[in-house]
Image (cartoon, rainbow, N blue to C red):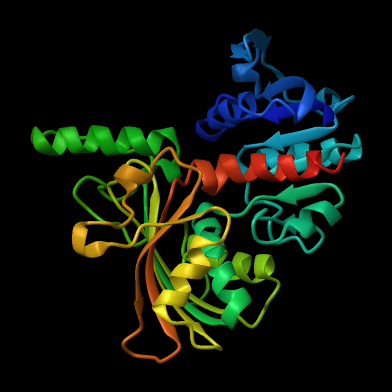
Length: 334
C-alpha cells in the first residue's frame, strides 16, 4: 500500500471513472489528493464519503506523494510529470506523450506486468484501441506466435472526450430535425456517418491513431517482428470501441483452441453463439472492464489465420481501468 496517491485530472471523463475505481479499492493508499489545472482548482469532490478540494497541478504538489496517476493531454503530461519523477514519485501516465520513449515502460498488466515492476519513474498506459487488441492477441501469441495482424477499428465518440459525445447527440438531433449543428470534436459529420480518420495523417497515408497500434503493439508484446496493418474509423456510437481482427500465427490454431485460449486468459470474456445473436456489442459491453471476443472463425484465405470480433469499453479497460490495474500491481509489491 502506498502512503499518498495523487490523481491528476480527476474531473475529466477518464478521471471521473478512476475516482470511482479507486473508491472500490481500499488497499492502494492511505491518503489521496486530487490535482487539476487552475480552472478546476477549488472544486469539491466526494471520495469515500469525505469531501476533498481539488488542488493546483504544480511541481510542489508532488512533494510527499508516492504514486501519481495522471489523465491529461500530452502537453500537460510533458510539462508536469517529469517533476513528479524528480520528487520521487512512481507515475502512471494515460497520455500518449511518453509511450514510445525507450526508457518508459508501456504496460498492460495481463500482458507484460514485469515491465511495470521493473520500471523506474514513468509507466505509460497504451492507447485504447491498442489495449483491447493486444489483450486479445496475447494468448494466441503465447500459444502459436503472432506473425501478422490486419485490424479495422470502429471507435466510439467518447474516445474524443466529452465533446465527442456532445457532438454525436447534438448532430443527431439536428439532422433529424433538419437543422444545422456546428461540431467541435470532429471535422466531418458524425451523425449517421463513418469517418475513416482518427488523428492526423502521417507516413505512408496512415493516421497517428493507426501508427500507435503498430508501434505500441510491438513494444508491449516485446516483438518487433509482428506486422500490423490497421485502419481506424470513428462511428456514431457513444461508448465502446469495436474491432475486426484478422491474425496470422506461426502455428495453426483451431477455432476450438482459440476459444479455449481466450476463455482461460484473464480479462477476456468470450461471447460466441452468433446463430443466437451471441456476440459482443457496444450496447451490452459498456461499463465493463473486460475485453469481449466473439465471431471467432477460421480465415478462409490462410490456413494459419483466425478472424474475430473484439469489443471493449474504451474509457475503462482502454484507459481508466488499465491505469488502476497497474497501480494495484505496484501496490502489491510495496
